[in-house]
Image (cartoon, rainbow, N blue to C red; front, side, top):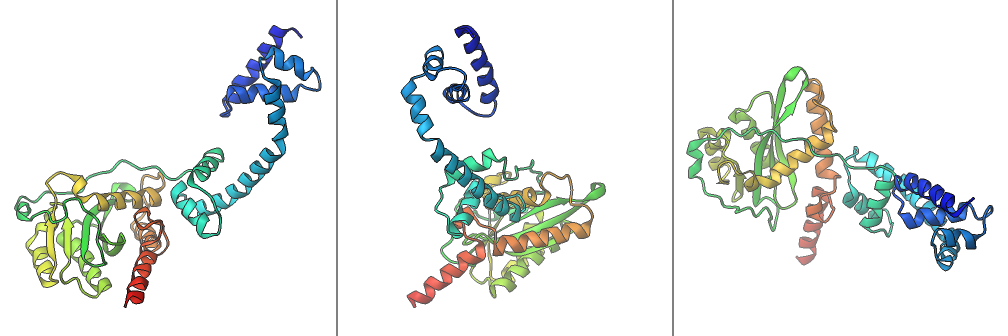
Length: 321
């Protein structure tokens, strides 16, 4: 075989291997190794402009590479199991946190690489649909958050929002949630086939039961008519909750709730157009909310679930006392 034919052969193979993510240097080295029984390594390296010492260095590391590949395959099996248990929702940060808790000393870059190699990926965001119906009267309420969605203790800063839940036959249910900024825990929620004030009021009452009391808490929302209604204002006064509202038409002022609802629908719908019937929708959301509070890792909490984060906080207070 002539030098030209040899080059043509290896370049053809290079295109095929490059489609698998290999670089040109890797494809040429692999070609030399595959054909060393037919041609002298010296001639192959000369024709293909490869440094022989580089080839032999690559060859000496073959055993270590094989071992790493086997380790990657074993880790990929565990990653796949974690990914499956999360409902296909976890990306590399949460998978890494789970692996570390299971005793693995692994960094996120390696986990991300293995997930790419074995086509393991989290669920992508769906396009968001707005549900806010502005209330002109609620413009009198000040923004007490200023886009600061952090809190030093539970039950001090709460956020609320409504999102739609698509069901079969073009119908919808609506979910109102109350999120505690300290741990991102959902302390109150309500599902109904309407967006009347009762929907958000029921969620706030549940939050009061969950926390025992909301006296002194600040509740932040958008300018939806439900949050500005006379009945809701009266409930906040009754529970001794101070209201806060962001600017009209600015979702960034309620970003923590927006992000939560996006995650909920991304991880429960998983690309589907709807939840099916209303009963299935309610059950699916209930199961996910329970798992979110008790088990799902949250980046804001250092990859701890909201409940685990609050338990750690309470343990520190006990020790300090």
